[in-house]
Image (cartoon, rainbow, N blue to C red; front, side, top):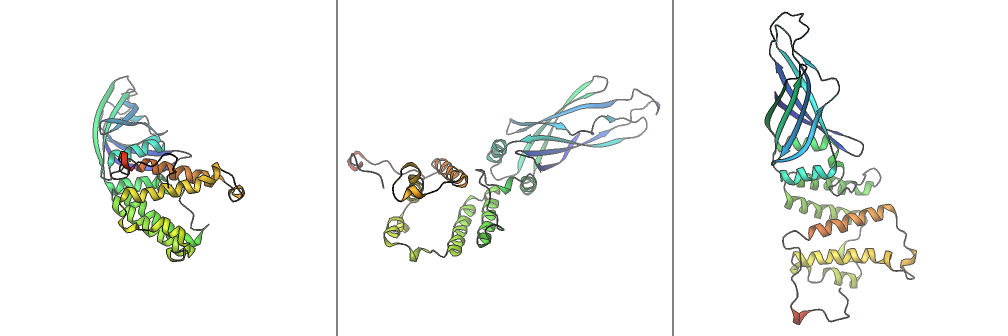
Length: 291
């Protein structure tokens, strides 16, 4: 009993992971018409990754029982599947870390006469094969934080930006994080090109607030600019004045802002993301708002 391949398929609100198991049943002996030849009636598999259970796999309908023959070998291929939600796939991706995926497959089976057996089979899924499996499941059609990738058909001016966004995600899945972040700069450059609003024709006051001394900013300072921009966008939904009262908010707004703020909070655990704590003598004076 060996694992021969791993496949994926999309489900409605979930992802289906398949494991193909090859079984060779040796000749059972006896007469060919004997009614009591052994049959594999039940088979389950538990897959573990890094020593932790990742899911229980069960056979698809029609694959069991596997019969024995008196005078010849019977070779069977059984498809075992497990339905995974996004949280499980993200946990698998975290354990994989952009490398090959090492699986420990633990089989438990039972023959028609009640005799049980168990077996353990290691199987390594090549990095490239696993990326294909993610694609088969439709996992790469959305970002990890469940933001739908924009449709090039709906926004043709952003088609190149969408293509580059897909490349960025591909770098991330392959464990090339620096390339992924760098590709996002290319995405934003394409958005600027599509909208025709480069940094040179921006309001001077806004340009000063966003870009003054930006080349000398460290990582934490740049992320603080992002935080301030997110506060700027969400502020009108909390306060109403002559300007903000006319703003309309849709499900797209709420979903994307939740995703961006959640991603930003998660980013705060990355190296060098947090600003240095000010000393007591440099603390912000009481009553002075943060900029």
